[in-house]
Length: 232
Ligand code: C5P
Image 1 (cartoon, rainbow, N blue to C red):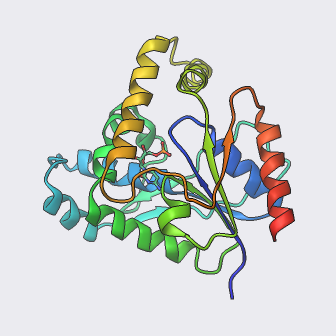
Image 2: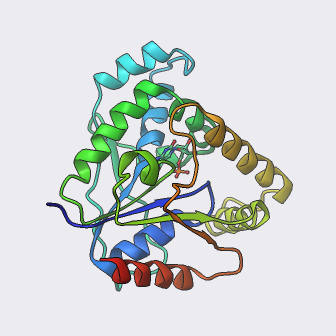
């Protein structure tokens, strides 16, 4: 017997992390950012100077390493701009280091490797063993928690996702990046995530697809919270 699980999947830039954290706070559940785990593995391999295409080498290093996420609990009254979840690799904090453009550009290559996925999925299932969590990623509803009570597939048009990403970068003081370039980068990550052979990004048949173009974070959060209260 476990508590309910909410699975939130979707492509890069659909607003998943903000929405996941708001939903978790509103429902008093833990949240699990599985993308942060793939990013942490990517950071580790770059830090070790490993050839990312060397799959046995990557698997070997990963088997000797520890990826740790802070248990994500949130105060519902917390401000909108929540800090990202804290992450450690072999005891070293990498919370900021896993968000650099270098890691972002390479993470899909690591996430396509079967050995990496099976190790991380196992760890994610351990985090979700007793339920009571909202997990976000690409394969939560299909692979990690196929029996989740609530499954959402969050999307937005590529133009909208590029606009949001541009605004995030401006807010972070990183200046203005060309929209066309951002659309190309997001499109490339979508292509890699959807076309890989192991656990590709696809909507679970029983997931509710929410297109968030023109919707506020509050509106999307309210929809999911209402769905949860309806189901659970
Ligand atoms: O969500 P975020 O953008 O941080 O995820 C980074 C990358 O990690 C994705 O582009 C994808 O390649 C990979 N990922 C995955 N499966 C998950 C979560 C993330 O393959 N469940």
